[in-house]
Length: 336
Length: 156
Image (tube, rainbow over all chains, first blue to last red):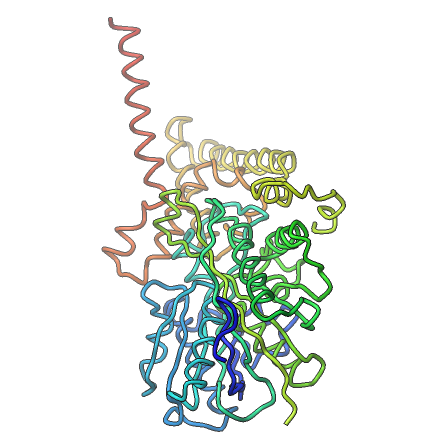
């Protein structure tokens, strides 16, 4: 049965996460998962532009994942991913030297789970045997694209979030490893009328609620069926709003409900505000932390619900409300 | 933060806007105002010292000392911006660092640095006034109307 309910895809072949490649920036490396990243960038200014830096990190993550999975680019049938730059230059430019069929995807910061969902679909349907799925983001490219020049002295409100610098890529295959992608729940677009680009958490919380509730109703599961339910990058403030939304709904909160944006930085790190955000936020935390917990057998099943705010610099200036989307995937430990 | 919010009982019929308002941390207005006052004042004191240097040591008249003083303050701001210090300082200082001439210099230097990768003409030249432009446009426009009012009062 390929689909349950209205929104949830079931991957009966249980595609595996064979290998992971994570590259993290300086502030991310000083965070709680610093030791778990494959490559930690010490010097941020080693390239001529921030955009090149981001592309370089994406390429590095691909190289690491190929090496860890003991495969070459020739063995890969499809590469899926995206980033936050216009025209997905981060993704496309960083893959131009690899001869792999490529599909760029965009759901803002929910792109990583979108890519894993499509990867699962590609493997389940048999069109691909091995797929790369990954995302990148960079603090300075996002600042320039969505906010102000990096060195501009404007005071940010406490609801702001810090865009994660780094790239995370997963090698998804038919066999290998013990972590499987079993389900994906594709989210609907939700817009609850938030207009301030400094309140991404508030803009995205309803999308997270909608997708998680749809997932539970489609699969007949409860939150208790998961060792951890993690949203993408709501930050501390968006997370608190989500908890209230669940409470209003009367949903029992009997699991470890957390958020990748809250986890990637310590609250006492400088200028992280409400937490992390960015397309790499969910990919880095999922690949460096959740997959590791599942591999070690500490957890059995995780729901990752990455959230994306679908605004552009122009729509924000035009005071449009911010629509958001959330796609969820289930990662499960399979013995044997 | 979250625990503090949790203490309030949740209204089951609260609208989404009410939920968001409940969790939005209040901007520390008092702290921000005090910091802005102190920092803005300190920047002006530094400016005053520079001006006194030009008057006492370099022998400028009070009027002539204004231009080199502003140039020194702009230079200081641009150097701090270039070393990546000004934005961190501004996050702490708020309006105190934005209002004086140093804040204006920072907007231009920051935009110029940011867009250097797009070339000298379309990058630096085209974007340097991206943030400072509105100040100039509305400064000139409001100066025109103030002058108009002044003319009407004194000459009509």
